[in-house]
Image (cartoon, rainbow, N blue to C red; front, side):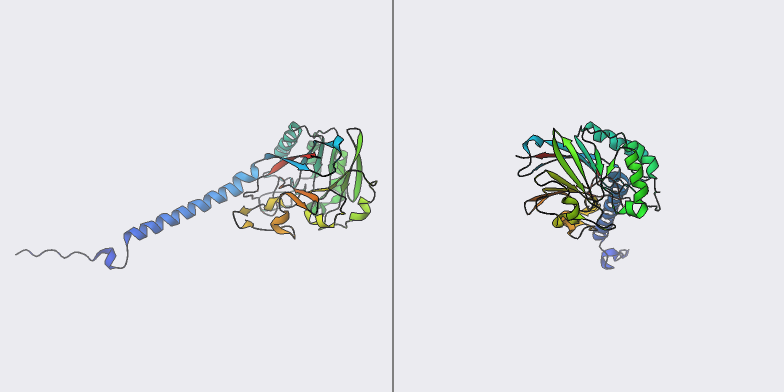
Length: 298
């Protein structure tokens, strides 16, 4: 009589279900793949992109003869030898000029500190490239915290020698369409003394004003008759996730002032996501941008 061979108890009896083990391996592999793709996108793809964003802001009592005024907004270029190198700066200039703005404003943080994957590029290298920016009403700028940590005096000298007027608690009267438009440029909130009221008081009463600042946190401090502040600094959060929002908040207001058009107390704030990166060369759901603002009265 032939005895039937005894079967091995198999993995189920050992407490292992091969189907669940396979599902676990597939799930872990999918998670690792997803994380790898996100890291690849955030560190190698999105920081190298550059989009043009168009935004119309309707301002109550804005002069009718300045209706449709077009302003190109650049910020946080953070020139380095990685994503925003000399070639990228030339691309920024070309794309901006293609928009045919009447006025160009640059909102600070030209400089990028030394790090593991990038090096500081001196203003004498990139300022002559920015000289090719074209707008009939001129190119105006404020400076940011990274610029202050570098050398404000040296940077300002290079910029102004190349046709970019820097406003540091200063005003500029612009002849726009045969009337005066006043730009008020304020010093960086983090690094230098601000003279908000004293500077704005230099503008004749009743004249149209646009305020420029690097950091949007000064917005609540502006007098009520200043209808618009344009700012940068936040990088749009730089790294953002759905529902969670930005990983690091660079303003006291958090996501409230992180990017885009904000309307509060009958005044307007526009915050651009800017172009470069800070601390780490990464962006996620905060694509580098050039903004074309159109100001209207209706």
